[in-house]
Figure 1 (cartoon, helix red, strand yellow):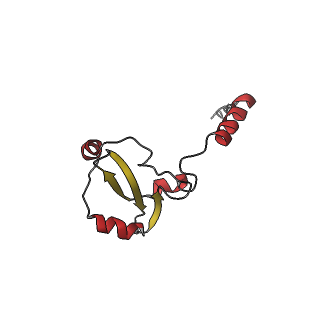
Figure 2 (cartoon, rainbow, N blue to C red):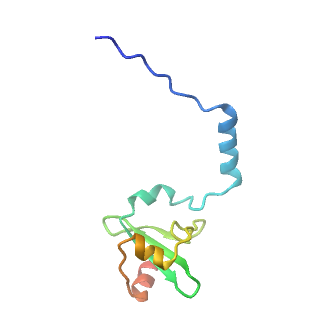
Figure 3 (cartoon, rainbow, N blue to C red):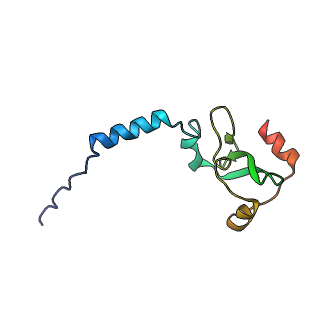
Length: 109
């Protein structure tokens, strides 16, 4: 049986790599501490400001119920805070449940 020819992995041109590196240095990441943790979030709690039609704060819990992300926090803007979603967008696109503000505040602290 003939062996398949090894396919060469395309290399990124040097100028593209340099450009990517420069962008990372000039444009700060929105969530430098939490970007790698977002895939582990199982449940989100989002505080939505209906008067200003925006997401104020967010808390992400892993499947064990531990808080692993929140935003805005230190240098992290927040995943949902950084997205421009209306309350209607949340209701239309996600299986949401409303919680009491006191519950959110307790989690936040």
